[in-house]
Each structure stands twice: as structure tokens, then as C-alpha cells.
Length: 402
Image 1 (cartoon, rainbow, N blue to C red):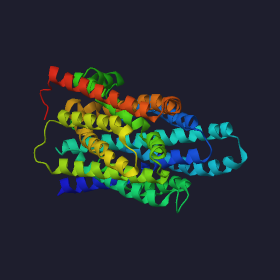
Image 2: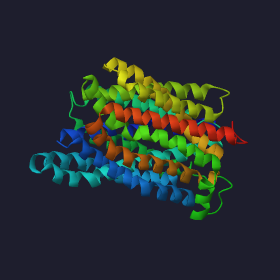
Image 3: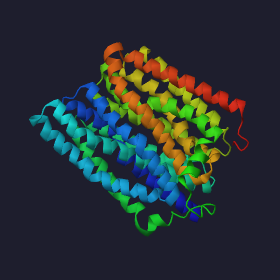
Image 4: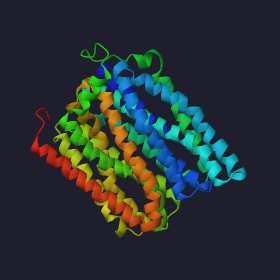
């Protein structure tokens, strides 16, 4: 009974978490509507990912040393609400009274904090939920699929309403509104009841010990190859979709439609993973993820219509379902549980580092060489990273691999 109660609790948390961060693609569209160029929008994303590069490792180490993933999640949610509410106020005011460079200087710190906050919310939730599911001997997809479910609902709703019936800036009101019930659920005695650390975690670990447990782990370091490739795709997906809409002649409101469809594919995959009594080794499932993402990006030049783009999104939908459904379980399978949050935050650093390169370079690459060069480059990078990851596993199998 207690096990079922715990699973239901984290399913609810995952649902609200991805509702609170699921409208970031519309934030980028909002910045473009203010008259900012593609390079300036890319700079805004780059500043956010640069902040993640240094902030996420500190958060992960602090979460492991203090056993405080839930508390850091709660703190981030609380700080993010006023920041998100301030963006449309200053954006709408500055759009009519300031030049584009001046407006950019105002938006960069607020957008950077928002981007960092959303990544930290996901990292802390992944760490907290992943550790709990690992102790219950369940695949992470058991609760993570509810995050996909919420993302589907909010993406399709946003696609139908934002930019058509309602102004895009409302996304900065919707995200804080969803964050409020999440704060209530994670705070107080109810949230603290799920804060009990493992029996092996009876003392505060030194930072050097935590880093050693992560970076001296062969299988984790080689896994980062696949993570880097996947996050190269993740770092440009929002900007990518904006230009793909122009490429096929579709309205930007269709971004939510594609995002929702991808999330639906992810949900189906994670539901399947959670129902399977016996899964293939997780590294094989993660390798398939890499192949699917690479294939979609290499096939983008053949797409000429919105229905074709939606159909092709099936590949990254299935790949994303495999990655998000197996990622945390695989990390806790190969990494000492004492350094779980640190390991998860290092993946956030991979996203940040790829995000800096992607956000700053994507707009320039599109302007200079075209969209095909960008998507093809990401596809080739994903394929190379996947093959290197597979080779590392074949050279040195993990003794406790599932």
C-alpha cells in the first residue's frame, strides 16, 4: 500500500513539473515577436545555458551533500514565479519604448534565470524521483510518463490558443500558475515524508568524493557521449522548430502541435516500458534512442509539408521516450547512489554546454548556410556519439547491467 502511495505521489509531481516548464518554446517565439533577430534570441538562450553550466553542478553537489533535492526544487519554484511574471511586463513596455539592443539587455538576465530555473527543476525532480523509483525497484518511466502526459495536454492546448485566440505572452502567466500546486505538494510534512535518505547515506560526503564517484566511473563517462549527442538535439529543438515552421510554410502556432505529438509518442513508449516485465538491457534501449534522433535530423530535407514534419517527429518522439524513460534508471544502475544528484546534474552541464554552442551558432548557421546544414550536422553528431557509446559498452560490459 505504501509503495502504491509513493508511486502515485511522484506521478502527480511529474505531471505538474512538466506543466510548469512546458511552455518555454513559446517564450522564444514571444521574444521574436518583440522584434529581436534570430541571433539575439539565440543569445538569450545561450546566456541561460551558460548559467546552467556553472549552476547545475553546484546544485547537484549540494543536493547530494545535504540530501536536499526536494528543498532545492522547492526553492527554485518559489524564486522562479516572480521572475516569470516580470518578463511580459518589461517586454511589452520595452517593445514600445526601447530599442532592440536595450530591450535585449533587460530580457537577458530574466530569461537566463528562467531557463536555469526550469532546468534545475527538471534535474532535481529527476534526481528525487529517480532515486525513489530505484529504491522501489521500478523503471523511472513508471512516473516520468505522467510528465509526458501533461506536456501533451499543455502543448496541444497552447497550439490551439496561444498566438491565435490568446497572446503568446500568457505563457509567462500559465507556468507560474501550474507551479503553485507543485509548491504545495512538495512543501511541508507531506513532501518531507519522502525525503528519507538511503541507509548507506548516513553522513555528508565531501565534494571530492562525489566527483570521484562520478568521473572515475567508466560506464558513466562513456554514457555522456550519448548524452552529449542527444542534448545537441535538445539544445536547438525550440529554435529548430521555429525555422522548420517557416521551411514548410506552417504557422508558428503549430509548434505546440509537433511538441505535443512528440510527447504523445514518448508517453506511449514509456507506458510500454513500465508495463514490460522484462526489458532489454537499458544501454541497448538508449542506443536505439540515438539512432532514431539521428535518422529524423538526416531526413529533414525531404520534408515539404506540416503533415510530413509531424510524421517525421515520430522518430524523436520514440527516441525521447526511450531516453527519458531509461535515463535516470540507467544512471542509478551504474553510479553509486551517494552521487546520484551529482551525476544527474552533470547531464545538465552537458545540456548547457551543447546549448551554448547550439544557441549561439544555430541562428548564424541557418542565416549563412541554411536549415539543412544545421539539422544534418546534428544528425551526424548524434550518429557518431551513439556508435561511440555502443563501442564502449561492447569493449567493457557492465557486470550489473540489466
